[in-house]
Image 1 (cartoon, rainbow, N blue to C red):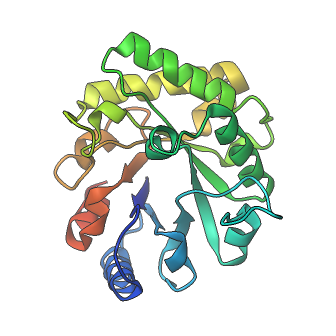
Image 2: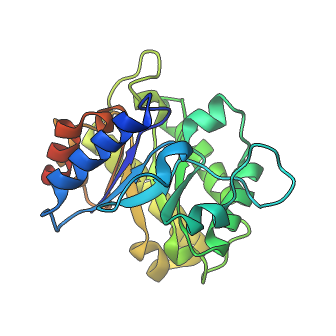
Length: 243
């Protein structure tokens, strides 16, 4: 199982970040069945660890004269192993297009880092939701070949089920299973059965210690992306234990 913590724009200070990181590292130290990755804000990454794998919440597609941006190679140089790409908040709030996501994904794979590609929709209508996910996958992976894709992780992120979404309602395990199956079927069409079966698909949408067991028990789901609940060390540790 792969369990990823997305701290988003939290916590407020490096002191708090270190305390949270160290608490989680200590709590999951002897749990061998799960691979745990912490994705803190850029500012804290170099100051955390050792004890857990580190991921970044985003990156730019390249280095050079791009004010305010951070490249995959910079992240790799400070020990980052994973990079989140295309999170729903960046697509919705920062207006990231599928083309931007595709460029970032290509850049991350080119450095040997492992991208965590988030796909999902605000629509509760499954037909419309899956139509949008199909488009996101096809456009994001259009420039990726079979040799590169082996390091890819995909997150089924139903935006309508995220706790910060107005009127958000947690998805059922059956809905998560259907979403993951749809994603894997599209990966099969793009890269073939052997590759599609090996790629990890996570569920992300209001996951916490109370419901994670139901989601990771679903056939075809290989872990979880945890947002708000990852800021509570005790709850996150419980989530890892139950995964």
